[in-house]
Amino acid sequence: MEIKIGIQHAPRELVVETDLDSDAVTALVTGAGDVLELTDTKGRKVLVKTEKLAYVEIGSPSIGAVGFRS
Image 1 (tube, helix red, strand yellow):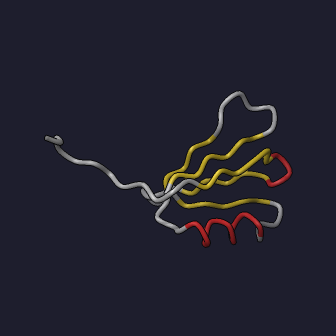
Image 2 (cartoon, helix red, strand yellow; image 1 turned 90 degrees about the horizontal axis):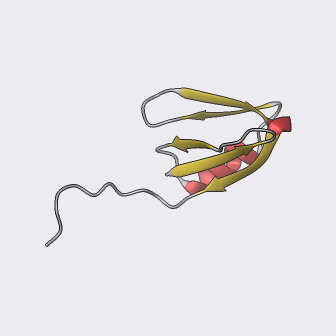
Image 3 (cartoon, one colour; image 1 turned 90 degrees about the vertical axis):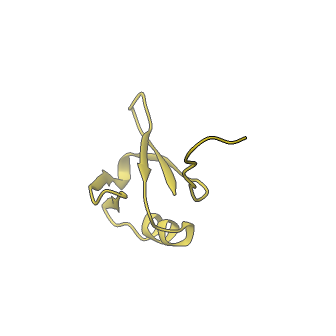
């Protein structure tokens, strides 16, 4: 699932790909204290101070396409 995080005064959004479902991400965002902590699909942690969050966009589950379509 792709998560886009807008950060105040930052020119670009932060994009995180995670294995969590939409409900789990929503729970993490709404339950975050001072810092929002997410782990991406490669095991890296992303930490963002919640006071700097502008928005969090939770995308649909991503399905990787492999090969060619005929």
